[in-house]
Length: 316
Length: 287
Image (cartoon, rainbow over all chains, first blue to last red; front, side, top):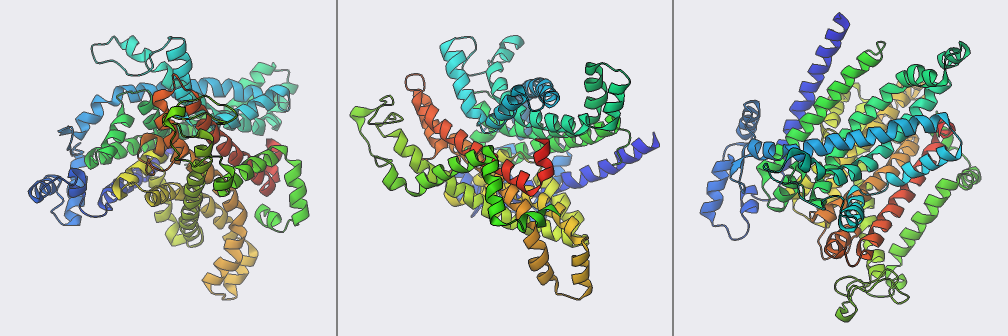
């Protein structure tokens, strides 16, 4: 128990440092804008008075160090600034668009893992067979397909062609929850299938690594059934690299969601970021980057903690 | 040390291995075709990429227009070839920038113990941002242009290379001949240039191939979103974005640029995988 608490504290310390650096990187990104960010945001029609007003509103008048201090203080108080174009707090804008992104990411990871685990395990068990070669080839191709292109094809075939799923949109709050989720099927499949490639390859490699180990041979020699050998003895020991790659995939899914949401017209965080970029709404870009990176750091932390649960030998 | 083994590998043996690995050979051939077509675009493409022909708009693939025409009657085959130039140029620029930054950061972290912790934490922080998100934020900050896209993606992918370089440098630093060089009082820059960097060539080459593939996908995504290079330049991403509106009646508008992306990225993945197997034969046995 003390070992787990020690590891937890150590990782929490590391996480705090990374988060502090993430905040600093986000702060710097907006400040590297050539010229005046307020002038860039307001465009060429803005008067000097408008620009000055926005500069004051964004706190750009203060010395850089003070701006940084205010930025950090705001984050600690849950204030990510004010969206200039939406005229609402960035936290409100993000929260209003969190649902589709959350469910899209969740379903995509479920689809990716649902495909990758059984296929990766089977491919390793049947190493060198036609099935294995097909899996290796398909994962290579899937990893080369842009998820937005697959999304466009799915829309063409299953939305426009068959009419089974809506081609775009998500429905408002008045739309029943299940109907809203129905809108997520095609985007989740597009993202999930593309991202299953990496997890499948890692699962296959991790399983190949352990299938030849002594304890697997011993389990077989003791007469354990093949299913038990694979699932209980081999898979359990192959889980660490698999959990790592699943954790990594979540970040990739969020990146993929930015583009996929645009293809499917989903009003999620990705769509918000893209429109914020097109309108140079820096507080929104800043806030979204920060939240997504913080979630990623948190997922990494959870993954590290899972290592200890899966394999007690792991020292963090 | 596998990296040194691969470096000293005779050229003939390297070629034999290349031809022995059919997947890698396939990747190399496809990539060579894409590069040659892009380099020789003015001679290979049957039409100018922006040549309008409204009477020929949205024509399906035929002997005169292999990939059909777009909403302005422009030849998609010619545009796809010219678009390859931009994609390759961007990806190459990204590889150069991320390699330079990655090597500097990775060697510094791996060789100088004091710098390891701060640089590693910075890399952790940079890698916490999903690649596309960080790239579009940087493009938004710097303003969209070809140079900005290359710079933004270069910065985004630098930590990936830095991690690999750091790992390899950590191993190299402990090798007896490096320790001997340090003990002999050889200047640090000489040790780094002669002994460390040279031995990092193989892992960098492998990782750079994968960064090339990722950059190609990312560039297409940025262009598709309208936050990449100018829409006046044909890129596979902008072709997909503009063809999207017509995809119900003219599916070839999205099929061919998409296939161009898939084949180019696939060729790079196959090449990267093959190179990794050459560098580390242990991995080849597992795959």
